[in-house]
Image (cartoon, rainbow, N blue to C red):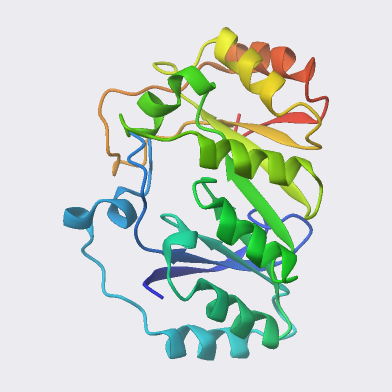
Length: 231
């Protein structure tokens, strides 16, 4: 595992859990609005890799204080030993939440079917017609993303979908198309974009609170559980 850091305490990343968040390195998308460019773009990676034993020593010290671990990135499912890593976490008694862009459906299914994942948060970058542009991948194949969405909609694991809303990329029509696509999902979050100062792209802006609320109402016609996050 290529671990680039740990947020030692989070009350927000893992629903109904007191958790830590571990950041893995590397991603197969290049979303211009990604706020973790230092975890995605090789030339931006300046931090020292954390040894797994250091992470697990920390985790062992947090027994009875934390009850979950959120694994994020980058894209965690690109890590070749992710299954072993999760098994070690679970052996210490912690629940596991996985953040993913949905591009590796086979491994996602394998981990869920093995009972290793307690919760999944999948990013929905945009409506299908604008997915390649929004993911920064002109040659993106959408079939794996569709497969991951269908798998989560089957309800085999608790999950949420989420979209980071960018004024330059998202319109009401896009939100409507996303809503139709993920109809039946219990939870869908429209997240406010925040410029972290470490973006892949440039000159991107958040939608206004009024625009976000209008988007929420559009999505609610298809996903009644849609909520705003960060607004």
